[in-house]
Length: 103
Image (cartoon, rainbow, N blue to C red):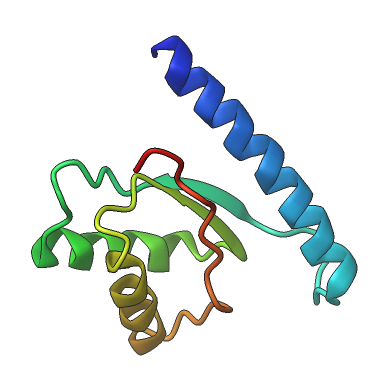
């Protein structure tokens, strides 16, 4: 893993932990634990419809309360992914997209 990739992961994990704590403090969970996942969509090249279907199946099996997605490309795939997950019975709140400087 290259240095810039490690730095990006460290930044993402720092943001994720802050986000998770704010989520935990803002809501009541039915249990004392939550499954949190970081999932790389590997959106380079852009994600095809076939691959998106496979990603939906995998995320459905994962069944995490919070998911941090990386390499979302194009960004519009996030809306399609959320719609497909909702259709599959896995509903999430509105996604939060961090600024992508230089993209």
